[in-house]
Structures are given as C-alpha cells and as structure tokens.
Image 1 (cartoon, helix red, strand yellow):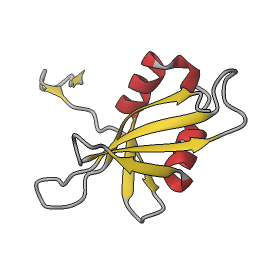
Image 2 (cartoon, rainbow, N blue to C red; image 1 turned 135 degrees about the horizontal axis):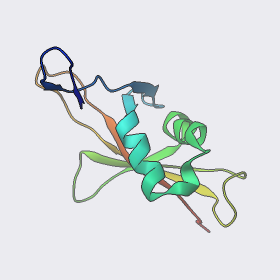
Image 3 (cartoon, helix red, strand yellow; image 1 turned 135 degrees about the vertical axis):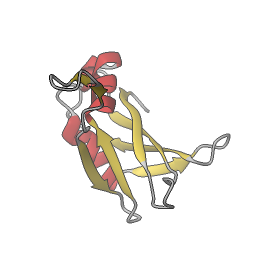
Image 4 (cartoon, rainbow, N blue to C red; image 1 turned 120 degrees about the vertical axis):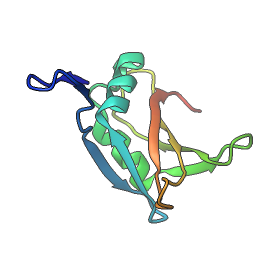
Length: 114
C-alpha cells in the first residue's frame, strides 16, 4: 500500500508475480508477498528460490486429503542447507472470478526425508 501525493488516497501497489509451469502444464505463480512470507518464517530458504522453482517444474506432487485444492510439491536436492535434503512447496489451486486458473504458492520450506 502507498499514499499518493495528489489524491491522498491509499492504493495497492501492483504485486510482481513469477509464473512457473509444472510437469502437468499448470501455471503457478509466486508473488513477492509470498516470497517474503517464506523467507520470514523459513530464513533457510533465502538463497533457494531457484530450488523452489525447480521443485514446481520437476518435483513430485500429492493432493491434500482434507482440502483437494491444496497440493504439496516436493523434490530431493543435494545442495540445501545442512541437515535438509528436500524442498517442500505448498500450492493452492483455484479459479478467479472470470473462471481463469488461479494457482499460487502459499509457502515452502526445507526438510530432511529418509
């Protein structure tokens, strides 16, 4: 949000989106707001945005059993932070008011999986 000097009104600044296509052809986006959320709550992710993108593009995914609009993407990496070997990305699938796909990244973190 920002204050415009002429009108004094608060307007919403356009948010940058990075579009990513998964293996199934779905377009998923990552906003600046979501990326800031991810690194705020999972600071180990700061230098791993490209790993997040690769996880969406080439990782495996499973559908949430309680909320079928939520998918978990995951992928193994050898060069994550010490003690971690997988990246987990949570994606919300849906449609906007025009019926167009609206699929976006909610959060992501690193995890050790045997």
